[in-house]
Image (cartoon, rainbow, N blue to C red; front, side):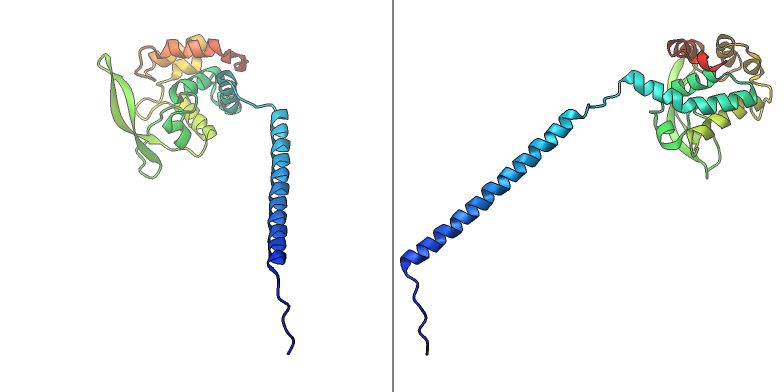
Length: 210
């Protein structure tokens, strides 16, 4: 029977020292590799300019999103695009309102259809003061669909008055159209006309009317 060679205490210590040194070396190498990758990634990030959109840029993007549909349906129904875009901005808070962001309803158009509407709280001007009420609002698949429906509303009027917005349709410029919306009873807000005019002039929305 072959005798097993006995490992001396010194040999054991040498082996353990070798293992410990190898592990330490691996840890150091791993740390060096991770450090190099970290530096490389930071250099890449530093070289890439951080794109932070200003409020003005965000507003202009929103305007450009609405413009094609506003022009398209404006031509079909004789509605000034500046008015459509300004109304959408004012009533949807630049598309940030819950009604606009979740349900694509830019103009606060209401609906009694339980299969295509959403009950939400809104503010309306009644008896000289703002009050909060719950109302059923129409749900749209897109902003374009909302703009199309808005154009049809102005062109064909309400169920109780088909001629309700004829003054708006007959307007030759945004000043006339904004005033006509107030006269024809589109909104309860007494400052609605002036708010629209300020938006149109601040963002030069009448550039789309020609």
